[in-house]
Image (tube, rainbow, N blue to C red; front, side, top):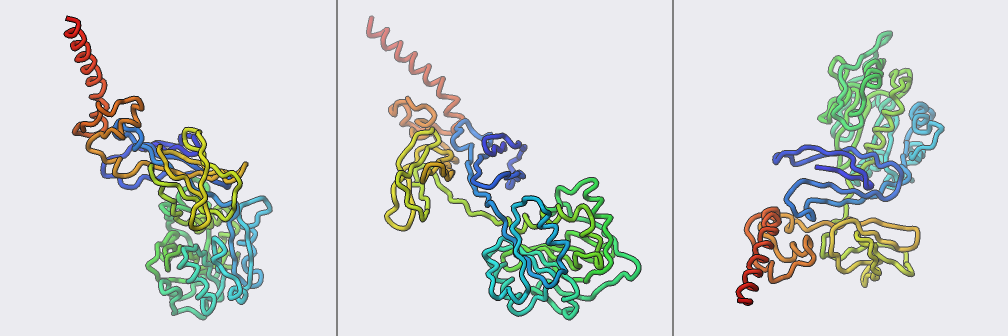
Length: 395
């Protein structure tokens, strides 16, 4: 499988018939619309060996931090490092959460905030809409020892090392935000000393584990959303973590992971109309086809938006509502056409535009590659037959 992103080949992977899921990591770069395609080595019919895609990278990543006082000083400083970043941070007190809708944000951070009442209700609602939550525990959770939060996490006790410290035993580098930690970065995390933490019991995945097998960070899905929980605070009284060089990149990796949501891309197929919803009324909207030809966009009868009635070739179509604005749309070959057991005239017409229908009306058993392999032979054979007929006529 070959991956092309923004017109540049990003990688290739060998696959077997048993491989069902193949993954590539993409650096989306700047905000805006991004396009690409996958290409497989199938039969000789290239049209159904390529799958096109397009998606949108938002310019800003909205993070809502809920906490009291100045407990979260290290965390807020990490999210606002004094340089330009895509993170737009809003900080509120727990009491203000009843007036703020978290669903207008990409990530919700609960820093040493007791999870009950309106805080719990707002958080569960945010999770139910597919949101991502970073939960950092602290002294506010002391009254909850022996209780369960989120119905998936039970707090057993608080551990205090006194003059000593607790060490990290293992880091789950199979977890995406931790997957690229190597060498000095990973050692930096392993060298982190924990002086206090809450022992928790949970079925969620442990991603950082203490030497006594207690979880020091867990993650999983709750109520359709994603959560990462640290059972200790990000300050020097609880841990060395906020003083480590790995802290800022670790927080950013986790924030971007929590903000990512599965995007439901519109699945347009060759022959189907393209429909684009938009509130803006354009004077001369148009579509630019993969072959660079242009067609006027039609206003939809119902709803707000425009459409292109008939698509004839797969590829990236561009909707241009007004000069300077372009929305790419991926159009792919229909699934039933990618599983043909015989080559039809319609399929061959795409490969050989000048083929006559009388030659292609009969179906040849086998896949597209077999037909394409036979085509030159049949063409030569037909020419020989034609030559023989001419010779006989002359005689």
